[in-house]
Amino acid sequence: MASVIGGEAAFIGSLTELIELNWSTVDALAAALSRMNRPGDKSRLASFLHDHERHLEVLAALAHELGEPPMESAVRPKLKSKALTNGMVGDRAILEAMRHYEEDSCAAYERMITFREGLSERARDVLRHSLAVERRHRDWFSEQLDSRQGLLLLPL
Image (cartoon, rainbow, N blue to C red; front, top):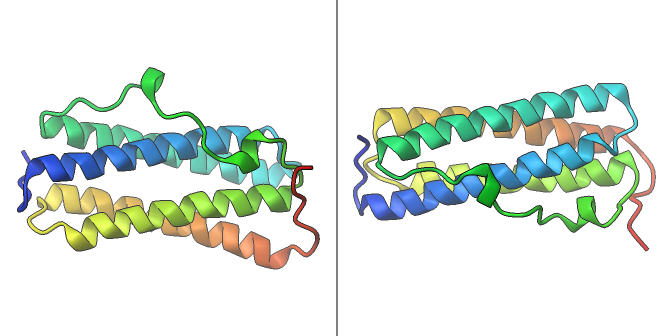
């Protein structure tokens, strides 16, 4: 069982937030996949979706180790991205929305690693690995946005 200075309850709360964020990102990626035009983009987003599903499995296992059952998919938070639920069109707009998800994920993992003293090595390894994956995702979205010129189409 992981021990956390400052209380396991606070750590479990932060872990739950990471799980919720990953569920939101899974939903956003699924919505984005159906709207993207380029096959290469779809392939990359499918890979990112798979990464987030793996994060959910690992974070759920960590929550179980702490005696806290993870959130079930049936009660997970609903998609919060207006960019992906309000009919935003255009690959560039979708890439921008997804980059924001990855930025939020990076920030959440960084906070967990930086401000949680006493994390078990396993917990710290899980968080560091997930952060590295999130940074790769964010960097890919940023590179794609930098390389594509054009309008960012917003819903009417």
